[in-house]
Length: 386
Image (cartoon, rainbow, N blue to C red; front, top):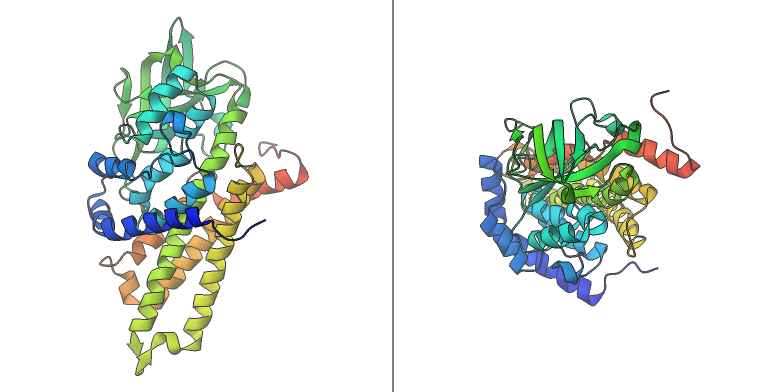
């Protein structure tokens, strides 16, 4: 058991940090202002630097490194903003990993290298108007007819809706009840019968557009089935890694806030001295540091325990639940220490606070993670319907 990074990991962290801090703050401000996603030019720059698909196999265009390396890079980008970190998230711990692990070989070889090269953005589409935490209640259905799958239904809260090139769509692929009928299909943006709702106006996550996906006899090739009916467990196994990415995006809001406020309290003077000289400020900084360190170790534990596969639901849910919680607390404390400067849109702190609340909702709300944790602890599944 080691609690230090290797020299190679430190070099990767330093490279990500240098690139993010030098290149991205002004871009992050523009994405926030205009509520638009990172440009394809920027995503291609990420690819050229080796920041996409860090933990994807080299045979599929990735770097072939581990989950911890991917999360190290993701945190450095997330410290700048959620929007500039999102392409890293999508390519390393997002839906593309379900394609890499479970899709037919032809689909895997067509999609995954394109994502790692920055030529394609793939989003996940899980929730529906009546299926969020109760995901197995989803109603969107795909009917296999010859060499096509015809989808009908509506998906909601799709981060990437309207601008991604393809979507991993959770849907019913058989009439079997509950999870037994659920699988996933890749639907590409130009598929006939696919349309998008208006962009959602959210409290945070500006630069990560979200919208409904509407399927009206939307036909895709049967070869686009990633996981057939009955594969819900596989999808959730891949989603356990995505939880680690969500947790790291939340952690990035907290650790970025902490770094910024550490600079601020040493420069800002009140009563004739830097406010860092006041014990109340010192105590708050120490609490924030402890929370960030604890969250990071929980996330890395989940990633390290899954280096030969995917994280466990227990490890990933503990990491996500804790990181989501402390992100709100740390960002809020940092904003308070900065006073009006923290509250001003001229500075990134208020954006971090808004985004930190979003990560505790996305990908399974905080309280749902606690239900997952209790179930894993006791070795049973709690049926919320009874």
